Amino acid sequence: MQPTSTKSSLHVPRESVHSLSLDRFVQLYQTPGNPVVVTDLLHQQDWNLDYLRQQLGTQPFVLRYYGNERYQQDKRQWKSIGSGVPPKTKPFADYVSLLQSREAHRQDIYLAKCPIHNTPLIHTEAIQSLQNYLNQLGLTRPASTLNLWVGPGGHIEALHYDPTDGTLVQLHGSKRVILFPPSQTANLYPFPFYIHLKHGMKLRSWFSQVYPDRPDFAAFPKLQEALKHKYEVILHPGELLYIPTGWWHEVESLGDGMVCSVNRFWRVYPTRRAVLSWQRWRTHLGSACALPSVAASLVKAAFSPDRSQRFKEILQMF
Ligand SMILES: O=C(O)CCC(=O)C(=O)O
Image (cartoon, rainbow, N blue to C red):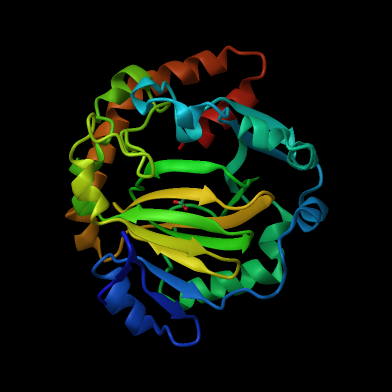
């Protein structure tokens, strides 16, 4: 399917859940590895803050403390990103207070990629019907559990790609997602894979060093070419974005309130697409380079007084 374009961005096709058949999904999106937005899903429940607090109460969650100066910095100065930023574990109800007092906005504190299989959310009608729908689309080979993402409007998950396919489902508030195809990898200046030798998993070679909305063409001249291939999606509640492996994405939570999504990662299918993806190979090379540093963190954690917490935080980095 040909993407349409307005102004400077290309648009990802949008398909209603009522008309997107398994065959159509496989043929147009999964086999070639093209993103799509599926609309008209999940009308059961608004996952607002009150609802989440009722469901999650004092269950502990790992929060990422990004700090509000992070996105003002030259990314080449970064020492950590993604799940490598300093984590703190807190009861969900405490995170609600941080959001309500706007401390989460001020410090850019994000509840990111937290599994929900041990929470009441997994039994809700919304999640049950989502799982059924994903199965109908032939997404039956999970590479992760379902994860919850809750954060303040204004938060940005920096430009990166994943070594798996992904589905991001919006449940409250909206997100702006900028995407670039895998062909633009070199033009987006990823951190080199050997960066993991020095930084372990704190810094990631599957993150880009550029800001697509604040391009510095003097430092990153090839970004001009990448911007010709930029896609943009506004994802509203009840909509799902399928992000094939290797597709770069930057995700911004819109508005001033709380924004909530769930996602899940999938093994890449057909296998041919996985094998031919250079992005996946460079992720494996990067992870191999991180092994000595991860082993050292595990040994350090084993001797720490809050050992189980340290192990949990290390595992959360993957
Ligand atoms: O929603 C977000 O903040 C990031 C989600 C993401 O990166 C993904 O689903 O792959």
